[in-house]
Figure 1 (tube, rainbow, N blue to C red):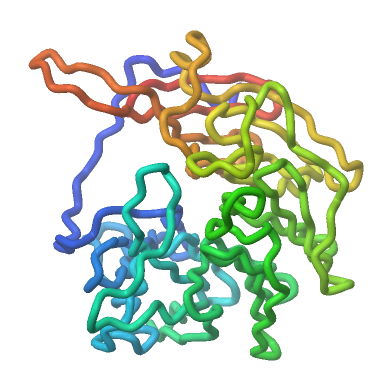
Figure 2 (cartoon, rainbow, N blue to C red):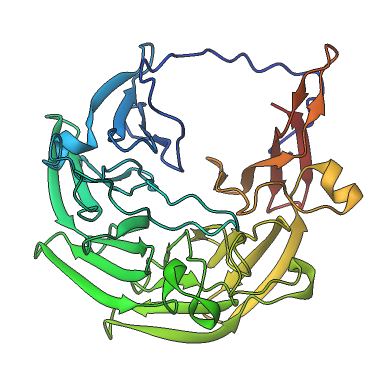
Length: 372
């Protein structure tokens, strides 16, 4: 029996829920379904005076704002560069949600290089991103730890078996972790040259996804040149795996040029039954697996919109797409990806359209369910 069937005439009814947060402009990989059926997410802002806000959408209700990140970490009203974003999902562990904060006050760029802007006159520099917990039963937020000054937490993952929160900071690329049992924050240093503040050979676009291996606590991540690195829990250090993601089929990328993710994985998850990570490469949109025990990478399928598969173009967004996840059966993969837009009958031009893609690990069936 197929887990996914083609439904060309199907209609998905969407309900709009106004946030009443006029300064918000984005959401980055935060939408998370938790055990009580609620959706938690963070609405972000690039405004110098606006902190991001945490929202909860409970079944059968309207979205509720649970708090401003500035209020939660005690930075509201301090005139520091705000906690404008969060790049992390909400990880649930023993009745508590864990997430991290980031910032988005950038310097204007003409070459696609993202850099932090200097604090305007009268404002303090960015204090650093935070690891935060939220007790579901009481609604209490706790500020757990803070990244180095000037560094947002670009991506976060959790090892729930060992009680660890892992993060990679932006723009310099420090690998950090917080231990829930000891309340200890550790910084293992920069792991990708000088990160996104580097110039020339020291510039590397940073990884946006950390993959935790539950069996031994290792944490895998990539560099823009394709190098696969690993944090060893046993040795408490960063190591090279000797594996590279450089593949001709992914395209040709200069890891020291801004404006793309190079040979990174864009989003990855661990499949316990199959003993592999499954990941997608940005821009090319190729799905692949990585077996850490064997050190093997296998290219599976190009899961871009069918239109791009036929015309050979890359995905529109320069960094690819983060909306990649397994379904409840753990065999059907879901991916939201873009195409280069369309022109409506009334002449209006839509610059980019969104497609829902599914792929079955069991059968190898790819389906583009069309424009959302």
